[in-house]
Length: 249
Image (cartoon, rainbow, N blue to C red; front, side, top):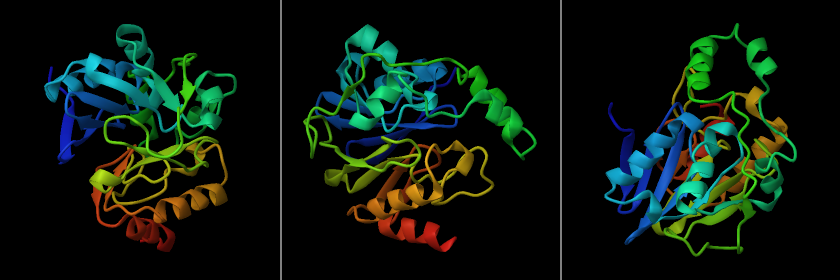
């Protein structure tokens, strides 16, 4: 069995592709920050990606989560249980992670969209990765501070609500990078194109207007490397990527 695809995009910035979803590793000497955790079935791949860098899972000092959908929460409970790794989200997203409420695509919505191209093979694939599991993170906590977090990579949380109420991107100024989660992606198993784009609207809890407002926030960030939740890394000014989406390019 081969390990996950780990792409080095800067001195200490790595994008890893799992089951139709990405996670990010930021390194600082002997410590790591994990951003997002794939599907539940991606747990072995998340651990393998850490070891690929020559580290142990215990070296992950914290997990940051862009939003509490099952394809981003998959590894967080195991990392918490096995290695004591804390999990942080935007204050608005903590209750979602704890499943005090749910802002996630329901199985009936997937069934209703099976007629669409590419949906059935995607649905079967992610089901095998645990998409149907009821994943909650009862230990989830809000970010401990505002501004740059005292974690490897010094990521700065940037609220980009729309996909979920507390969806958060992470600006990594030292690497000139933005981890955009699902507020701006560059591809998806259901999309016929690659390049900067919005995720299919039926995945979003919020409105189209809120998704566009999130783009406005991303456009203010000084970065030329986009690390999305879905699709390949994109090089070029993030502002230009946002403009391409707005213009329909």
